[in-house]
Image (cartoon, rainbow, N blue to C red; front, side):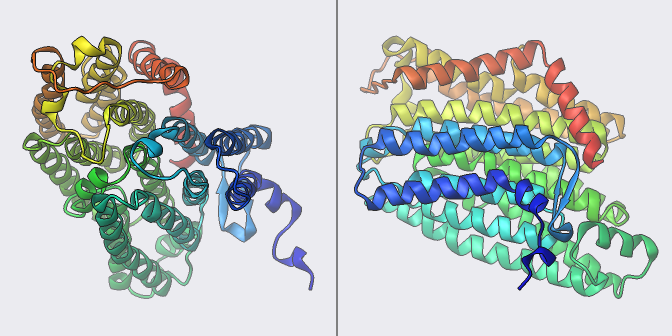
Length: 484
């Protein structure tokens, strides 16, 4: 059989990063089978795979490439997200060093392997040029996350979270798949360009099937990025998952969901988008409002950050609603900043955890007197999440709000600003407990030199992008041009 009729050497070269990550994951699993229990070795191998994949990305260049008969489309947009996934994956592995043992779980090779497989799934989602490929990437990502969320096998809360995520995730996947099937029935193709051409030419078999398909696809994406009212899985899953997994879950997979959603609605459904603008407006308002109000009443820090993540997803929907270069650029900038802030916050929380009980606000009382450096770092991340200058969180929100105002969404921005004001309360609540409460309840977080260096890097990113964001903004504008 002549395989060249299915793919060429350029196709294989285009997926070199995915091949490297797959081989690295297999090597990690082989080391596990060979009883190589030293976590440092497994971590080094997994981290080396991520670095090699990044090197392959750079060497591959940023020219537009269509691979495997139109299933994958590589450009600066996909490359931007690929680097984000690799960066978040690498930092998650570093922050996880020692955390699982502290939480009473064995160090196993499956953990870094699952992180690598999740990164591959995310890369496929934003490289996809076909609904089938988006589905395959989404499934690979989801299956990896189901296991990672329930990785603390002796923790009932972790087991419960994994089971909830599996059941609700499978339900949402069904919506996405049914939406893809309806879209195929209406247009005769699942290729993004083919769908757009069919809609533009008016050759759609049934507009009812098409709009139902778009609606079901939107439900699938809404679950993945935790948009209200499809967000109810997130607080339980975020609370029960290992904290380092929670940090990974609310950054890279959320970015992958928004990246894939941007490609689908801007490339496949540009002609049909005006009919869906009101839906995105409602989703943005509902998500940011429900997320912020729910976060106000939480006593558990991880649940608070879970609802905070929901509210930030509502802000990001504003960029999709704007649907121009300024809006997409603001979304990309926001995702970078949001990932840095949350990775740092969850890394510090993972250092503070000392058993299977999740941390409450009261447990942070007086922490500033015991560990002023980590308390200061956590305070900086909270201030940035709240959107105060001169942090990057302020610039990120300003970019989204200004793009929405330029398109005439004045009331939407007013609602977003009011929600931002509401968020000040719960973000500053943890700062008040650290600095203005005298009780000392025994939290004694300690950090290694490598982890401290990474936290310092994330803090530097927060301030550098808050004071001089121009360089990254230029990059995001170029990337947004590739998909607009």
